[in-house]
Image 1 (cartoon, rainbow, N blue to C red):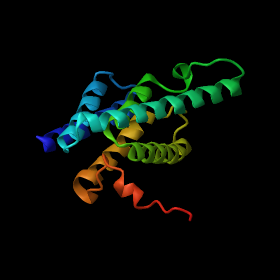
Image 2: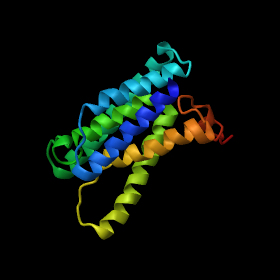
Image 3: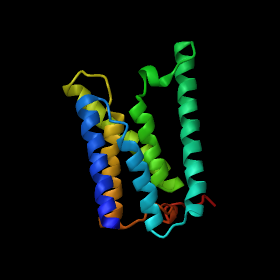
Image 4: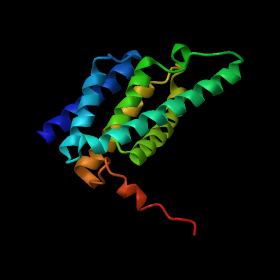
Length: 175
């Protein structure tokens, strides 16, 4: 059951990648399945909903803080109140942000979010040298990065992205 669900999640992420790359839009119906699949995979890995719930709240709170700061920054730069979904981020991008927030532990979510944005920026810089289209398929590129991130967890390195212990081993206190 878990293997089939993992494959389904990866296929849906691939669909997000293809749709966003091709059309710069993603069908919203994919996101509830990805959210449900991410939560169900966490439950199948012997976590309880009581363990998942606080991490979901923290991850979504972090997203809200990041998006609020981004809105504030863009508003200050433009000199007026802005709605970042009008020109800067698509609704598919915002919906996609919830997928890793529900699928990963807190530190893994932060690691994924920062590294996927860095990956997206690098890919887009290379792409702009070839193509002058200024729209960035953010959800699609992050979906591609999440495919590699989850696949490496499930079938290569087994670092368990629903647990922060593999990241905490790299933490070295300065004292």
